[in-house]
Amino acid sequence: MPKTRKMLSDWMAPYIQSLMSLIETQSKETLANWAIAYSEAVMQPLWERDYPDDLRPQQALKAAREWLSGTIKLPQAKKEILACHGAARDAEGNPVAQAAARAIGQSASTIHSARHCIGLAFYGALAVAYDQLGTAASWDEIEQCAAAECGRIEAALRSIAVEHETNPAKINWNC
Image (cartoon, rainbow, N blue to C red; front, side):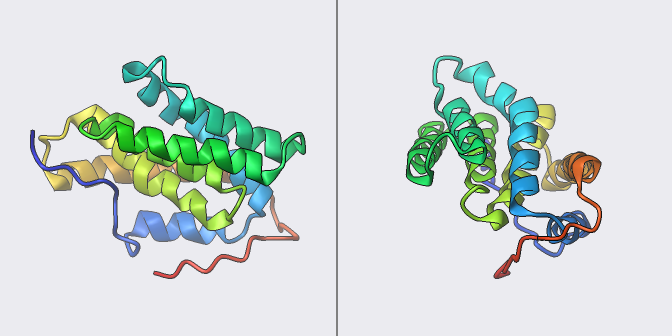
């Protein structure tokens, strides 16, 4: 098996910069709802295809939604999110499922810190690219496919973005 990368890493890529600019205009609640919904629709099926009986990623998304609705406290949600990260570690050797679980974990973690939502792009776009092209594809091909997925990720956020959001998340990207 060829060596695979665990995530995209070019913070300066135009598709990442564009997404980051949009993220900075939205509230943490909007960002969490977007990241969770996208992960449920796109990432969860990638995970479930190979691990249908491992519910840790689904439980993390469910817990994040429950926290957003006020039915559970953050420590309860964090327990499920950490379990999802464990599922990602356990999927070593399966780049699609591992990246999907990491994207799910980061999406669910947006309830704790808005900046985690960028993990949907860095991990999720790679999961989709590996799924569509395989891990033997050249990095240029992988990155081109991931860029297209990032475009879909951004379009999903743009479709629910609150115009003139009064309480945008304050994000220090540290990059």
